[in-house]
Amino acid sequence: MASAQAASAPLAGRRILLGITGSIAAYKAAMLCRLLKTAGAEVRVVMTPLAKQFITPLTMATLSKNPILVEFFNPENGAWNSHVSLGEWADCYLIAPATANTLAKMATGVADNLLLTTYLSARCPVVVAPAMDLDMYAHPATQQNLRTLAGRGVRIVEPAEGELASGLTGKGRMAEPAEIAGFVADLLDEKKKTLAGKRLIVTAGATIEAIDPVRFISNHSSGKMGYAIAGELAARGASVTLVSGRTALPVPPGVDRVDVLSADDMYEATVKAFDEADGAVMCAAVADYTPETVSDTKLKKGDGELFIRLRRTRDIAAELGSRKGNRLLVGFALETNDEEAHAQLKLEKKNFDFIVLNSLRDAGAGFRGDTNKVTLIDRSGREELPLMSKREVAARIADRIEHLFTR
Ligand code: C5P
Image (cartoon, rainbow, N blue to C red; front, side):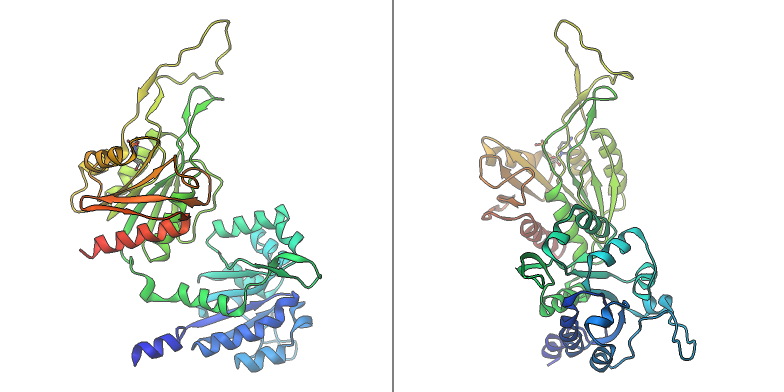
């Protein structure tokens, strides 16, 4: 009975502040509001002045059963609409539809209406559902703003491809109300926080080994797999420290990122964080060799050959493996030949609980892409997964981690 009620009212007792901006998709906010209410949420609505032209405050007040907030104060009696208390009231601030204009203002901290001042003072999770014409959405300025916001923890419900108000067809149409309501319900679902209370480290990306102030040795790792894992673990409630080599990726929501450059920097940051951690996922592509000396000045070319002497770096995973105790340690192996045998050796040598093997021989696996094809190997066997998105691979790895914690 209780679970049937939870299924029909996944947002029971939750307080959602619904922000509506001036897009034609604002008409869908009526349905969204109804869905949130049906799911059990209490809803208050804040609108930008332009949003009122697209959907009336009367409609939204009737559906939300609360007065609509647009201005900083009520012009009739001077009552102040406090953006601070609105932000404090909400368990989630959902801005849907979010126009290119509002996203740009959020990214730069402009606070010229109540919806935006509330954003700046909100401490709760913020979700945006962009809605705009395809070219506005694809514009580098909008994309940059979305990355900036994602990097600050704002969750984005991606727009869909489809027919747009302009008559053009493309990506920019606001996600459907049911998808947005489901996204918010998932975000606030405490039962999905299966890793709450766990402190986990994820290493990700490539390290950079300086030769001189201009050149370096590195590799093709994009960091995407590690970032997906960090995001997935954080979404399940873990407190995640992401020790990251250089990448252009945004920090996943709820993740604490520590930026490093060289293998030595990564070693120091990871070993230090491990003292307090319950486990670590070693996803970074760490250089095995680094120049023995780094020139202070740019090396000049000469007539002959140039030899750079390299020394071994320290193996971070092996170090954590040696001091692991009953903590959890997950490794990666990227191989080009004799894949399984090499992965097995690493599993033992570095004392991993399991290892994620990807082979560069598999199409769709490895660097830069958004997909991966992996085999999970532990001491009791192997599980070969089909080609899937890096997000799905991250979810499968997180499932295993969860399982290991409940042993
Ligand atoms: O031995 P190999 O470098 O192939 O092992 C790969 C695994 O070890 C990965 O999990 C990688 O993140 C980790 N590793 C590390 N420190 C190094 C080298 C590899 O943590 N110096």
